[in-house]
Amino acid sequence: MTNRKSTNWTSRDNAMLRQSLHRGATRRDLMKMMMAGGLTMSASGLILGSATAAYAAEPTMGGMIRVAGATSSTADTLDPAISSNSTDYSRICACYNRLTFLDTSGDPQMELAESIESDNAKVWTINLRSGVTFHDGRTLSADDVVFSLARHLDKAVGSKVNSIAAQMSEITAVDPLTVQITLDAPNADLPVILSLHHFMIVADGTTDFSAGNGTGAFMVEEFTPGVRSVMLRNTNYFKDTGPYLDGFEFFAISDENARLNALVAGDVHLSSALNSRALRLLDATPGVTADASNSGNYTNLNMRRDMNPGESLDFVTGMKYLLNREQIEKSVMRGLAIAGNDQPVSPANRFHNAELAPKAFDPERARHHFEKAGLLGTEIPIVASDAATASVDIATLVQQAGSEIGMNFNVDRVPADGYWSNYWLKAPIHFGNINPRPTPDILFSLLYTSDAPWNESRFKSESFDTKLVEARGELDFARRKEIYDEMQVMVSEDAGTAIPVYLSSLDGRSEQIGGLESNPLGGMMGYAFAEYIWLNT
Image (cartoon, rainbow, N blue to C red; front, side, top):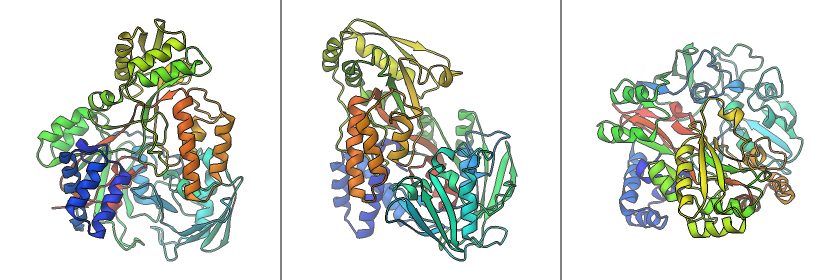
């Protein structure tokens, strides 16, 4: 998590800063490092002060906290396979564990697995930790893992990750603490995939998930879908550290202003998913603070390459030069964003191509491309909606910039209701709103391959498709990074998707809360906050 004034400082940069602190780097060395990364002296000081305090802070045991999420309904569930929103994720992260989890840098670390190994990226051997117990006292075994993973392949379960799990052609228990997974094709990302929220491990044979019987840091005291949950510390937790809290109550306040006011009034310790408009009040209120984290979600401008005017690459390129990314970042998003380079792998991801610079705002260069496309002066509609974060504001800025060079853009603002079914993927020029995914393979497979289900601009490239298959089976990190770098350039230059900024999520918290960090799986530490934070009294 970073202070809102320094949202260009990524989660990977935070990890490097903590490592430097551990190595004993001086304050001057750290300030130089941050300023070399483009931060101002004041922003560098804010981050360093926060990081030093977090590094020096000692976790304290005890205390109950109250947390307000943004969504709730009678469909709330403790079944990891069908969990679908931040409220579900916050609860299942407390009750259960995964085989792996992603650290602040996006690197997979072992959790219930002691090791995950493969020499060909197709057949994987998972060795489990011994002595781990479920809340009901049962001991974790390979059978639990086989059952948990196989559930995603059963259409009747309705798993949200069925399409991802479908690559697991065989899942077998080799012995009580060893599982073997055979994929239908090599995929070096399996350790990362297994860190997704839905792949939590449940007890073999579970059909009733209302008790949240997992191996996690907290046990369910109360769970009323659509109302609230209360969870208490698991005193038999297998990890050496944590959890620090005695427990927490989680409920939803759907109205954003009410959720913010509950934090300011001291009724809750954490409020998730706040809007940038909340910053002024949080800054003015003693005892509360705002935490921004960038995990890679974004609003993008889509120009379908199979329809006019997006059929012309010159038109697409001109649109990318007409996006004033700095103004979008600072004015539209009020600093809660990072400049984007027109491809979906954000700086929060370890495979991000940092050498690929965002296109500069250059109206005259844009005019040149529009002229080459034969479209200068043509009236062109852009469909925007409140359903896609900040899309109306971004479209308006494009319209204004276009008017100064002879382009006539008509912003067609449509209702949020029905936008995703009626306009997204369909209109010649429209906006999307993409949530973060932990791997380039998932992003590219979902959005950019020739057969991608959400290919927003109908980008098609045999070379791109071939590179994706090559990268998927490559176990050497450096070589995979090289391939993904090339693919990001291809998307940035040739796809009809303009990604002006990566959006930061905003959570508000009481200053009594310690230990909260960013995570590439989303806000509130990828919704796993309960296990890692503590309450300073």
